[in-house]
Image (tube, rainbow, N blue to C red):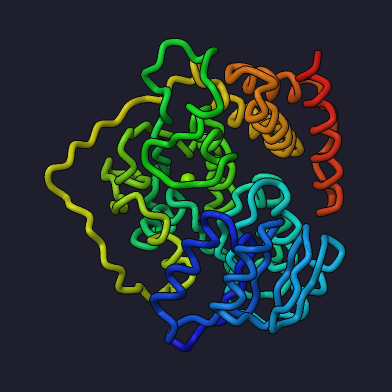
Length: 369
Ligand code: MG
């Protein structure tokens, strides 16, 4: 493999940092050419010092005394992307803030290593249209991507996403869940938004929509199963009843490395022990965790409703983390926002952003009423 030029969007976040760990291990295979971060100036500065990119972008803050070209603020993001020549862009900005950055990277006609699921949830129709190649980083989708390469499409009956079920699968009282409790994920080390989403099962709902765009299966062919230990990362069910899966330790560096090195595999020292290992599957309980049901409902309603679902969830999770609403209010706010929103499918990426804004306003109103 020729040395690949990597651009990392969201470099100071959890996925961004783990990507840099992979790059650090394989300097002969990868070169960091660009880094973009939100507001963690100190961390970004350290990264610039270590990896010497050609350019950096900081959304909020000021980066001085670094030996590369610096782009600042939302307004200079487009110039930053135009300036950097890359082979792979790791899109790992959290939330709907990542939609336009992913789209702009996709327009460059290079590989997108996609960690920002909101990009496809909100703008799947536009991003899949312009992107040359998308390799998913989300562990479940990475698993499906790998499994689907082994079979013929006409052999596939359905695809099945695995979910940990979150920390409250067996908890009776969900009303009293605190932000601190929701931020402890049993298996994965991730950012705050996605950790809370895992606890409500909204993360799995968004992943169903992500899979819908990545693999073009109708939503009734995309299923979810609960597996409390995240070692089986998803399954492909074939017409003869066989199931194909990818199994590994719950370590995000594995799908990150795969997405930037594909079709090659890197030698990562895995300490995953197969025995003893107990695997138990359960059906998801969508009465106690209605967010998953709402995600399917939004797909059934059609666009723009999956965008509205995501916007309302972002508002609700933010308010929950601030202690303003209860854990059990999150699905209620999402459901009511879906009911109140009235609109048609976006015709371009700008309309996606507009729908997101309007839906967030409605969600805030719903939350405060
Ligand atoms: Mg995932």
